[in-house]
Length: 114
Length: 113
Image 1 (cartoon, rainbow over the protein chains, first blue to last red):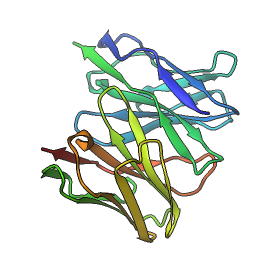
Image 2 (image 1 turned 45 degrees about the vertical axis):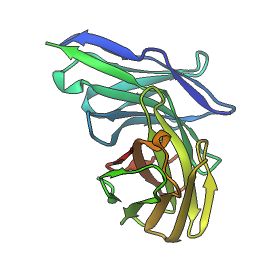
Image 3 (image 1 turned 90 degrees about the vertical axis):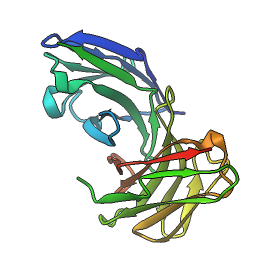
């Protein structure tokens, strides 16, 4: 069975400082993993995805994530936060052999202070 | 952006009334999904479709039914709405199974009084 745990429900950083959003997954096989972002009252936008190629994945807006199989983690990072990064972020594992069903983490709300 | 629309975008209804939400895509993708989003739960899968007339249940399917008579349309019906179904509903599409991305619609905010 697939599941995702996002370790922090809220993260607060100052503008210009690094961002770390943590995600651990459980999967019965090598998974596909995604990060999506949701700005207030908006839909979900794909930030990046891991699909068994390079373990360090680069996404949009300067975000990246590293797949660590030994730690079953897929943490999202950004070197320098911008005010526009304030949003909710979701880590997702895909059951790619079962109709590509998605399993979402509960989300991490990122607050960026000026 | 993927061509996905949802209608209505907002709806207020009363307990016990039927409600149908529509998802329409212009991408000709095979797979379609309905999720609900509630605080602290992320998104949870209600139903999904893997082709015309081919649908199956997700993890929170009780009280919901779906239909897909055309590739481009996926309908979600609440036969008798309850207050616990107050939520934001998202439709998503995916081109194929395997290592593929889901693209999400703008969402429908449903309030059941």
